[in-house]
Image (cartoon, rainbow, N blue to C red; front, side, top):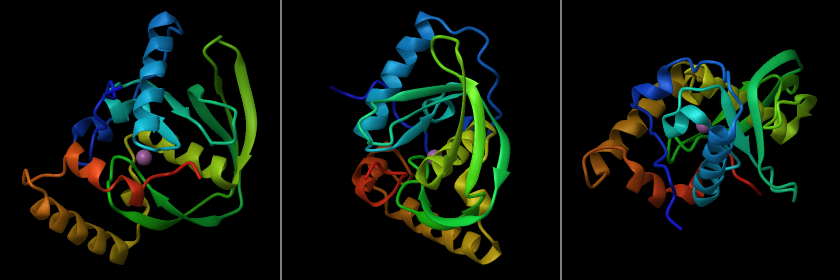
Length: 188
Ligand code: NI
């Protein structure tokens, strides 16, 4: 089955805007989430935020690969964060590149599920990282924004080179497909 959405790639302005709160949890949103699961699994990602498929709303889908199946978190808010850890992070919207990024190690997060039930949980390790990464997307922030000066220079260089090497002369979905196994917050 073809993916219902093309994942938006760095350079697309939609990735740089702050998404707005979900105000209605209805069948339309549920259907959108279903489509996003397909897109996420096809890209072998562990998480996907709505802006990555061009939807300016505050929700994400994810699957840690632990057998729980796909999950949705709507209007997520980090209420507490603690500690610090480094994680080799990638992003489906920044294909082919991964970076060691420092973020809080443990967070508390609240949000809503598709039944409009409030959910609250503590997340550390991979889930904690995934939540922080996807929540960044809802605020128009990409992982490259967490790099230091030197890393950023390297990243820009690599992106320029990839853009030049790409058959169409730009970073596009074909390139994303070609480099998939090397990046992203993967399911293990
Ligand atoms: Ni991402």
